[in-house]
Length: 296
Image (cartoon, rainbow, N blue to C red; front, side):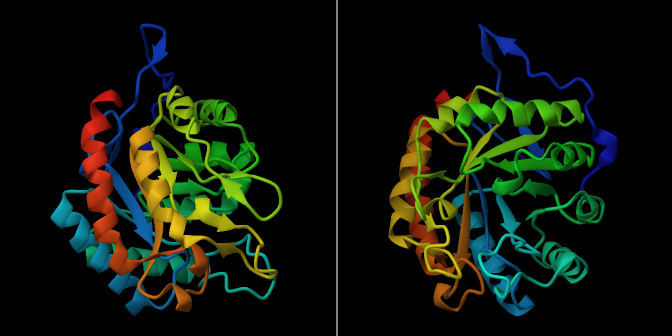
């Protein structure tokens, strides 16, 4: 649950030696950024049946607890940008927020979900700890400004069509709304039709805006619209890209994880198998231990 009373109306990041200082973002009882422990946002793409969501979330919580990784459960109540009109979108706002509240209480973890319209922000902010702006909507000034006013931590996905430096304008819009608790997420850049690539320069560039940077390792291997009426994906590249991103310097990872991606109701081709997660996290933690001293 976000606290609107904590708005900071003087939010221009401080400069030190001509460079922007990293702002540490607090989520519940842990911080993100500035060499804090690597955070993980993970869960199914969209809210499916409650039993499955709890299974995925509970397993991830157990893994991250063993490894000392702060964990935020992620899932969408509505995937409003599906390729086909007939694709599964999720349970909707009311039922979806009820599910997220139940998951939050049952697992005792913070939660993140995306909002697509200004009208969704107030009800979502009563439940979630982090509001997420989808990549396709990252330039929508009114949506970003309203999210900034919510009192929530705001995670903005960088649009597939944006240069990393363009995210500075997004950060400025959030500052105008009084928000200093900002996360920026890289999720790949369009490379021709139905394809994405990850420019590793994006991470140090976006860090210059003073906000912690997250890497979305699963959406970055999407093939948007590549399956005709849905998106395809190259799941085999999730692990190498996650390792590379952590080496390049990020503060956290975002991943769609599913116990059986072939049965996933959304983004199955790019979702990581749940039983592959722990090994990958051990690998990225070893890399993070080497580079975290440079992320202050």
